[in-house]
Length: 394
Image 1 (cartoon, rainbow, N blue to C red):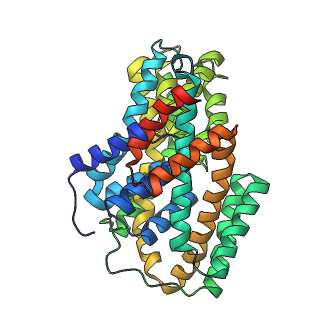
Image 2: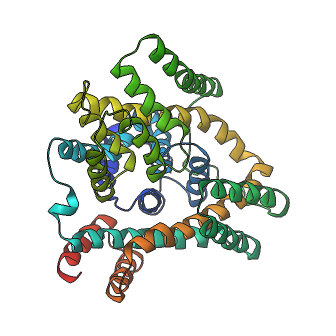
Image 3: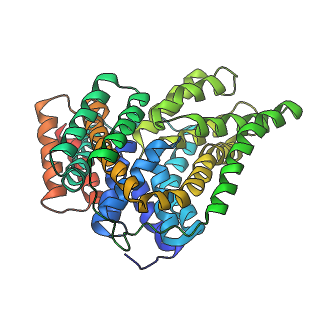
């Protein structure tokens, strides 16, 4: 795990993920685990679980933040940018094209193709939950934490419940779990000093408080857009669908984008691979006043993702020190068990509930799971095969 890659290599790997990672943030974490823990062996299972735990605590899109962190650990700041660009640009480009007049994907492709893509996302999440449970939930206590976390999140269904179960699991782990020591090199190596981390954090808060003031002092569409999308990326936990009400309030209520255009773009964003935050590119390109078009898309896309860059760069230098502490590792062992439980809950809702509606679709999902777990087919091949098979079978 000590070899480092060039930014170009990182971009190509994440580009493949950006083209094939359907199913939302939980599925993305499954694709990342398969790519970077199992196939490329850039991270140990423990390091990846710790990273996912951190990203669950940070506001913003957890899967994109995990990708940024992996790119950062392999090739510094340029690696982080390469990872983000590769994973984000495919869906962003498609959504900008939609904004220029293309119909939504659901009207272009038959139901079976979209159903097949949803089902393969279920298979990817199931594979990730199974693999992480085998590695991180050994023993009665950790299995019980996983089960209880899944039950609480399923019953509650709120982002606050996810944060709550992780905090409680951390306390239980601190006092009752004796963790394994991390390896000498588990792949998560961040060459950022704590001083630099503090500066990045100051930049995050400076923009969060300064942009509204600047917008008041210098009224204009450009600053208003940057402020709105930056706050959307900075203040929303859970990412993805959670950010939509805030974006709707900012864009539709302000008459920047029509309600019909907002709903059409959201429907398309659900159907393309990659992070749902790329919906911001559609909104920027659809603005009814300047800046709009490609310029608007770039501004909104960068503004909504900028907080993720700043928070990841700020948190990782301190996270590395926390991970090396024996007490912190005990707490993290509990948190990791809770994270697996949260992923297990997400496997049912929204992944299962939005994918499986008939015995035939369940059979389809079983085949996709076997193809990934036992036939060892590459995820991109299973994605393409599921889309084609869905067109003829569903």
